[in-house]
Image (cartoon, rainbow, N blue to C red):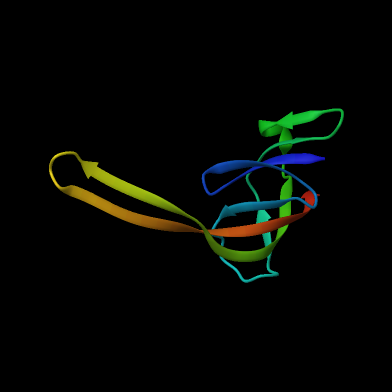
Length: 102
């Protein structure tokens, strides 16, 4: 069985025992998290979308919160001696999906 969940403005296709990387979630390692915004569910035979999904929730366990890879932003205007270089590391959370169901 799989589900499509929405968290942090993004959608993820998940199944039991999957590990996903999402934007930072509150909580310590080992804490339980529940995703209520389930957009779609399905198994090998049928797919439920929208209102047909009902009250299905996806449960997961926080593994760790860490910083992601650095993204470098470089601005330059030619012939004007204008150069700016900055970096940014987004905080990410790894979540292991433990159950999909009501």
